[in-house]
Amino acid sequence: MINLTKYMRKGLANAPENPILKFATYASQIPDVVKFTLGEPDFNTPDHIKKVAQKSITDNHSHYAPSNGTIGLRTAASIFLKKKYGQTYDPATEVLVTNGVSEGIFDTVVAVLNPGDVMVVPTPIFSLYMSDEAIINEGIEVVEIDTSQSDFKLTPKQLQQVIDQYGDRVRMLVMNYPTNPTGVVYTQSELDALADVIRDRPIFALCDEIYSELNYDQPHASMEKSLHDQVILMNGVSKSWAMTGYRIGIVCAPKEILTQIAKVHQTIVTTEPTPMQDAAEEAFKNGMDDAQQMKLEFQKRRDVLYEGLTKLGFVCAKPEGAFYIFAKIPTGFEQDDSKFIYDLVDKAHVAVTGGSCFAKGGEGYIRFSYAVAMSQIEEGLKRLEKYVKENRK
Ligand SMILES: Cc1ncc(COP(=O)(O)O)c(C=O)c1O
Image 1 (cartoon, protein in one colour):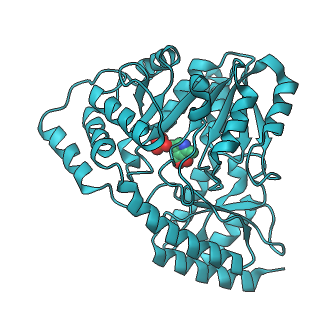
Image 2 (image 1 turned 90 degrees about the vertical axis):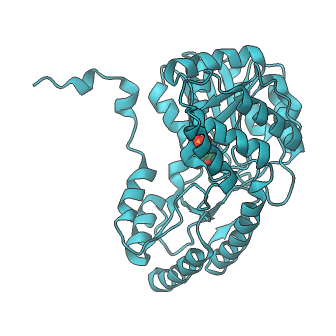
């Protein structure tokens, strides 16, 4: 029989199996496992949003919506971004509704980059940025900037160095703040300084602000404020309203840029499900502050987990946003994070994500997601304490 797989797309064949999913499947087989692996809120979607989704189905909102999204949702998202963060996008021409930010990232990378172009990615970073590249890579070069030596923040100097090295080939800078997996938050002046490095150069800034409502200590800062014309902004309902399964993301950009990105969306998705768009409209319109309750709870969990881990000898910065703690594996333990996480889950029944899943600079770290109940955090810390006592070499 002919082996057809070898005639399929090369990027796919070379893309490695997703280590996060592989480990999640392994850990799930342990019946009493405490999981710090999930990158999604454990809360339920607020009731007022669920009701709108149900009503939308009952009212037969069962037809294709406009490809860029219902005008109701685009308008509600635009008003939300303006009121909350002062970001100005025309709902008619500058807002696109996608299948989560995940699709928004893919559409943008496809729409912007040509063979030979360089995409600059500060790492550690959400793994999708690396896997998209592996799949669609046709001569696109991803240049990782390891930020582990600068408190996991990209500095203007690091960015300038890459621009000096790659010159006009640099076409896109990826920014994600608050950051998955480190929980790092940039101040407005830090973002402004980075914006200055790429200002008036033919470089797009893909700014992934999916965790914008989960800033604990300062108001949300955005690169859009200082670099509107070059920014392609991502946001959505997954994290702020606990709606990961609804699959609604928002991409905003100046009209001419958005028009091109929308062509990719039209080709691969046509449009998002209408009832889910109605629900997301309700979230942006009448749930402006829904995330605040969740944030308070996340903050309590962060404090308990951070203090517990620090006592046990894990070195980690106190995260200022999102719901992740990125901790260094203490000395006296296996330093290869991909081996450490298997040992930990086998012996202590505690599941965490290995730092090297998030690219350069993540090696030797583990990511804890504290989007789990406080009781699980307490139980997880007890198990970790026992593990640390019994396994330190
Ligand atoms: C930084 C970042 N961007 C995007 C996403 C995906 O978001 P969505 O559910 O809207 O596709 C995630 C999910 O974990 C994330 O951490």
